[in-house]
Image (cartoon, rainbow, N blue to C red; front, side, top):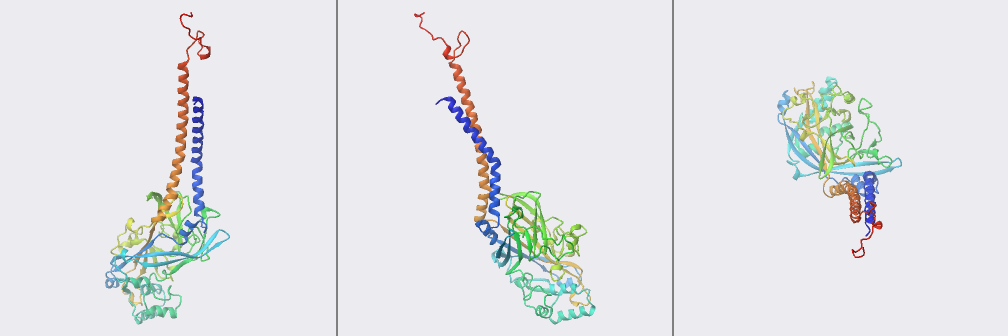
Length: 493
């Protein structure tokens, strides 16, 4: 084959591969981003992502820990409470969206129902275990009645005695979780309807099981992918009424399951929590990898439950106590309830001085969400919160004895889940392997193209050298083979 044709062929092929590879460098990410956007939009046509959103296939668990009071008699005498942590009592959480309705403005409404199923094999103990905790009905009501006339407080105390309700409850885990029969509860529901959150049995989670989290309306992302999953309204409200400032009453972020894609380290994770009665926001902490998938870890800032004195924007959540406590009485029937991190992690150290037996650590008591930044999909979630009761001695209510003023931890719980199995494999293939293959392909094209161009240059250079070696200079200094005098035999000369 003619050397010049080989040279031209290699050069043209190499140039085309370099150009194609270079185009892929710029176009490849655009193609990937476009596919992410196309597949993330909440639309029944997106079968896999829609089914994941509708019926969350990831196994979620709720692990509950009780603070068993070891010295109830001494607490009534004014001594510090001493507690021991019991648990975890683990429940599998089933989440399912119902009444899904799409709207013309690219939003969708739904009710999300949750059910809990006890998992004995994952628990340390059984629902039949007996623990002692403060009686919310008695000690909570006492604080609520503190400013009532003395005669009213005496009457309340007499009511407690009539129904044999004491300051502490000693019952099974199952009863405390999902409800127990109480004549006092029946009496209050009959004569003071609406005072208690539950109309049946009274339990810490009785209103959670087989219930929904309210009517959420969120953006589908069809009109703007950066709005996907963000809450448009909750129960028809675009803002809350529980708090004292417009900022604290804002419903921000998503419903807490997924976030918009293309996150950066400057992005935050805002979400609205009906259980906390407010919007919360997590901040970036570090990068990480889970099963080969890159992730960003987001954690709670120290200001999340700070009081108004330490963090001015939280003034609207007051009346406040020490930093590290969120007063949720305004959305818990005015009961003196506070939410915090478990064991008062990231809270004012003075709270630990009031209760013996607490040992906060970040690993065990800090909350986090691991997010795949390209899609906004959580890979690993651990939300940990503690429920506390503010209690004190109230004159006229004999059941409160000489109890010292204290924010008393009752239980803490962790809701956790992580992507695994077939979903993780699909996720890894589509969002890690395929983009990686495309990246390798584009650089392979560039590499092969440059190699082909280099080969063309080498072929050209070697052909030129062979050409020069076959040329002999004539008397005029010409090196052209056509101008050379042919050599004749000696006898001719």
